Length: 275
Image (tube, rainbow, N blue to C red; front, side, top):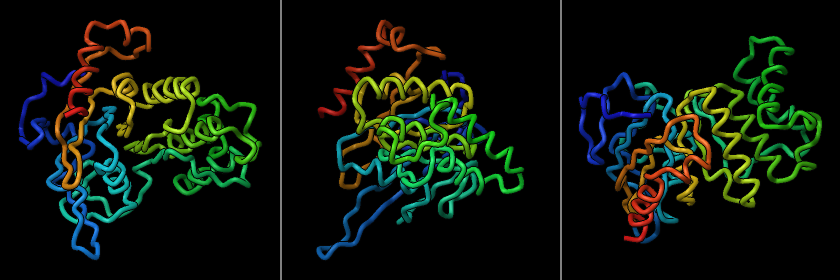
């Protein structure tokens, strides 16, 4: 996604600004404080970030800088200490079907089948659809993640990679406006990780929803993203830098690795993390 032609209407401290009608997710002066016996611990402070409609953003930063805290606040799972988070201009008031979440651990109901796990969300979000229609939605997304033969397998019978495929299907099946991903491939071997990156980006290319993904992997951040957001180290972490990735979509791993700008992008991210 190329954004050079967007006219600047607002300015934020991270140096990136967009007109309001382009923005899906808006974080303004975000703050997160945890009280401790020794006083308040400020995880995030003065954090400003705007994410566009249909944009795929990856977020990197050192462990403990507050990436997961920020994502859980966007998901509505962690109270906001200060500032505001809005989806399409509407402040969030807790969890909602407009935000789908894929965690590092899939968090499936182990006694339920893959289909039943996906149906849990579909049944809640589409209560007025027929049972057959809801099953078709769940089956469609399980098919998209390559689990045609595992609809009726219980979650505890699936490998870790297959469980994460169910987690991806479950998140897309509720048709969220924003997809939030918290290091979804961090516990997987490199081969499975690459396969699921390809599956994720293939479905995202078709669905074109806004996606925000935390990762520790610089190469993953570049391959998937339209923009890589870099967070400063905590405490009082905020947005430190943002790097636009101007690779065409759809993109393949081979094309990305052979692109003239790939190592320039990689060096920029590593230099940020090392300082």
